Image 1 (cartoon, helix red, strand yellow):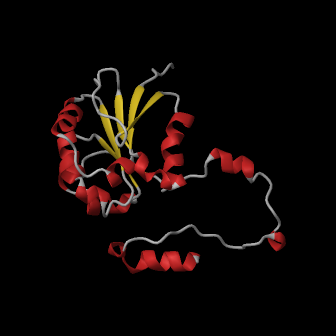
Image 2: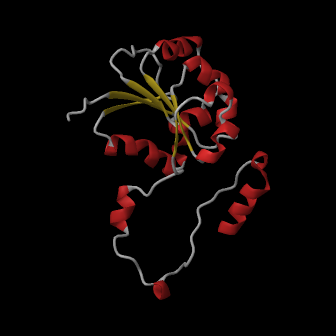
Length: 185
């Protein structure tokens, strides 16, 4: 069975690339997909090209996390696109809630989420409850780290026994995010 190669427009926001995990996540699509991935950085470019050559549009979670306002022209183009439109979310408590009206206007056809299946209806209510959802992890180990740390160091020779990545977050994200940072320190 031969599967047709699709042209996928992947819309991202490079403002989020201060965190390597976000860059690695976005880059993984072109590294591992058999389809043609075309990246569009909403921060650096004008959205002034036709969408006729694309089969799918994927909206990165970096796009939703850092983009607040969309021009009416952008909304019209996305809404008029007849192909599959997939929204990837992380931090659903923030990004998804802020973009509910945009998602309806865009006519999103599927959601990729960190929310586990038993809680989908708690988060994605009303018109979003019938959309296909896919549960994913927040990040993955990039290929270059697998080769960099190919051989493991015996536990008794390691400088650290436990590692944790965290950063100071705004107070709006609550006590837990502060505690996560303090645990890392």
